[in-house]
Length: 167
Length: 106
Image (cartoon, rainbow over all chains, first blue to last red; front, side, top):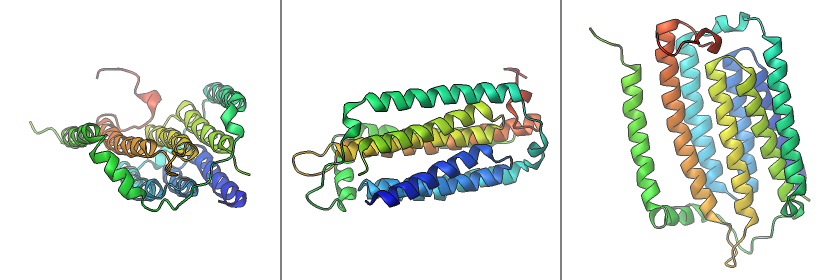
């Protein structure tokens, strides 16, 4: 991947990621999150992870964002925009996040492998769905079935939580 | 040239944005969105390491990509349960503002 495209998509992802937490309107935040995830999916594809990029678009930009927008619409959250800002908490949170970013920069700067470029792949990786599927059903068969139980438990839990109590 | 460090820095910055969102915002739905940003930042560094560690057959390390598959699945379940809790809370209190919900039992 050319460095130009990398910077375009990384900047797209970071700018719209920042827009998610800056916007006062929840709908604008959710739509910024979609754009941020599309930039992230492009970065995944730049790393030759086509399957992960595609399920990123399908699951996040498709399913999870629709769920967020649906809940925002259901709860009618427009009144939240009028709230005053707690400046002390904002400055404190920003300072903690800034210190955290400094730490990440120093750790990555001292990590010796971070100066190396990615090794070339001798052949195409468009068969990654096949490879990941083979791993899922052989080495990771037990975690795969556990994740199915997790989804089932989440489904039952959501139904119980959102049910109206009938007395 | 784009090195592994570039991807790790971008991933770290995305994680920081999500972290700042959890610290700064008081709306539960925005906090859930910031949590998603943090999970995805972790995914980006996992994919970068997967592409960096090429095995002798010339393929990336697919174990990391299987791991991301699990992370995405758990994130989807987490968002569904989290939003159901938000809806249940909104029915009781008519708010999604964390400062209005300070008692553990009501």
